[in-house]
Length: 297
Image (tube, rainbow, N blue to C red):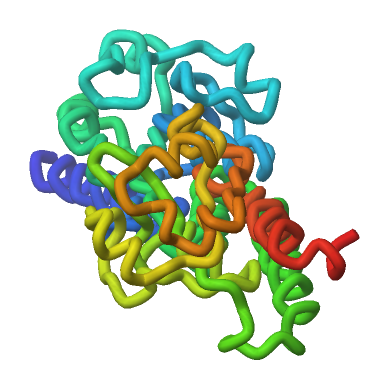
């Protein structure tokens, strides 16, 4: 009898293991394998990018941050805190009973480690290229049971970007304007070659003056920007007045930069160039239209 019970328990454990393995599996931006016993029916997003993505594929989002304002429907979802990990409420997250939490990469590690202690799975989403964004969309489609929808969203985004690039094919690279993309002004930071902002500039027909810098958000000096003499200065519109022509002229030596001399300062809505979601295609189009208005009327 005891032997029969032992065998039965072993079979139950084996069946449980097989069942767990048959659920959705994906690999996140940190290289972690995320396995669920079944598609996530309740998802919490810890950043604007994941929020846009999850809504685009039709996943059930039950919690977002106060910075998640797109799409408009996100405004009506329960708020779990701000963007930084220490501003988020662990208790609120737990009360929403999520099957999956989607974070924005290493910046949220402190929180996701605490969630792991409660058995809550998380997927880290921190893409650095258009292909990474598309793969993240598809991966989260797998984990939420929205495979068909996610493939449509990812394919459409890449196709829209490719169409813009084809329209610019006739313009030789050496004839494209050099661009400085400003992320912050104090300290002065730009986008490294491992960011989708760099990809947006290049796909939109610009030549990123700091394309040689690896990584994500390198700090640069005023002297180096002046030396590299960008013809255009770009950035997201959440800079406020710090990226205005008047503010740039007030920076020592910046009046020598061609972009400042000629008033070619372009700000783009932050939602389409700062959030890694399907709307990055709109960001590419905005850059291309700003640089080549005659081609994108």
